[in-house]
Image (cartoon, rainbow, N blue to C red; front, side, top):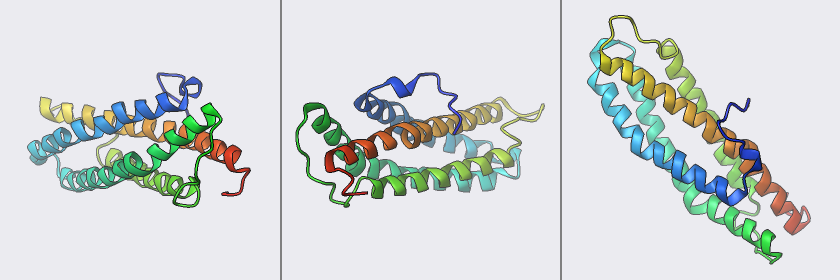
Length: 180
């Protein structure tokens, strides 16, 4: 994925990257998603495609809630423990899933599905271009949906391209490739 990030995430330590994802992306989905969904329902009559957009976005929030929970409860705690063990030169038990690659593969699949879903939303909404006669609420909805998609892209980039490869590399260094 092309890196259009506002920060040079590659230079950040792994624990800071995880904190950023949790505080910016996870919190952002949970705080902004429901407001965007309410706005979709508020302007539903302005565009016939908003019925499908509402279904797609609603399902996205539900699926993302599950995805974020898996990251917060399973994957990120292990990655942070692995990071600390590597930094301190201490041993760490292998992940209960066998290897960190297993949950990472699931997360990456989730990312792909969400990006495809939000590309569909963008296509339905003419890449978030509001008609000239659209209400201010409709224009605000286009802004929010576009921002949501951009944040999702950044979330995916930071995890898929930086956090996950670093975690796989650290695990390999701890277990000499036994878990790959």
